[in-house]
Image (cartoon, rainbow, N blue to C red; front, side, top):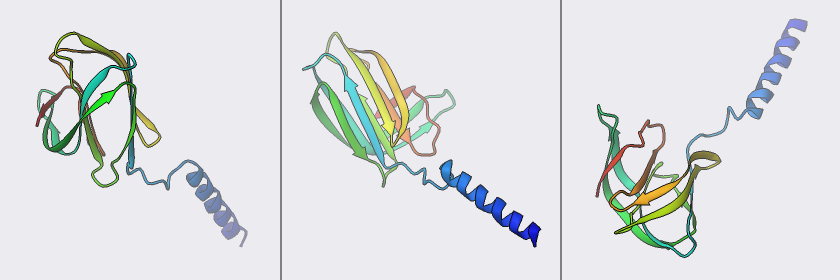
Length: 146
């Protein structure tokens, strides 16, 4: 009888510990939080999509084919949220200026997990890009076909 009570108590403690560690939380992503800082008032064109396919080739390049996208002209800073609960994937391209560069600080979070926190330049001819796909390993070397 004592052995049974001890096993029940141990099981209860294990359940409490697992709940406290988040073992029962659903890891499925629901929101992407996107923030871009730079010179206030700078206008940048950004392409967003959740409708694409992506894969990594033998050269570690993530190839992306986009089926539908939105191009938005933003005035810095950008601070927005995207619902990805259905598609579970997200693509962003910050289009480069025709000449010169943008100095940007970019942050991308999925729910409460940080994915990207980078500072640097976006130079003419080279967009800044990021692809997120739930449960897929991708690279930061990205080629996009729209």
